[in-house]
Image (cartoon, rainbow, N blue to C red; front, side, top):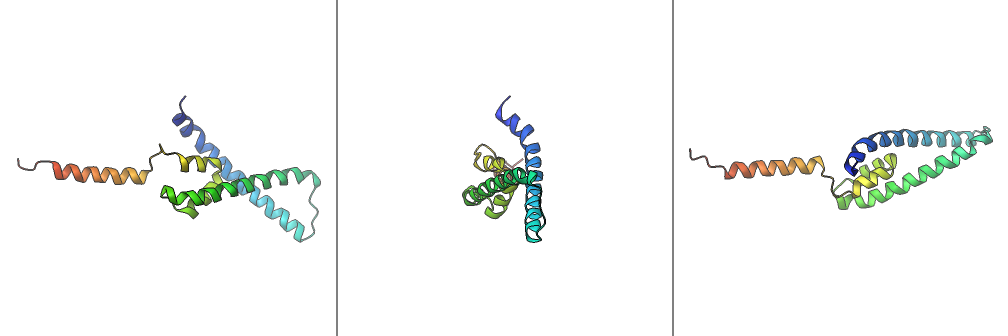
Length: 126
């Protein structure tokens, strides 16, 4: 198994799971804030879950900020890539810093350039 095979098979389900879990963590934190504002008692048995989700949200936030700073140097939209990385986590950073990955936009631009060059070079004297 090579790294490209792992990226193709493992990354998509991990990204979906990460997005689902981070969205759930945000909802859980909003519920906790709502409960605190309205003086609703939250079971103490949920405290470890709150600490775990806070750690995950803070970690993903730091990754999103890092991605936002470096996205411009990789010709990506900083806000868009920062939010994307916030939801998918470390995989977003791996995709950002992966130099071997060719984006579809660069492929399309390069293929159009090659096609126009081939048309200019082909002899139409027949």
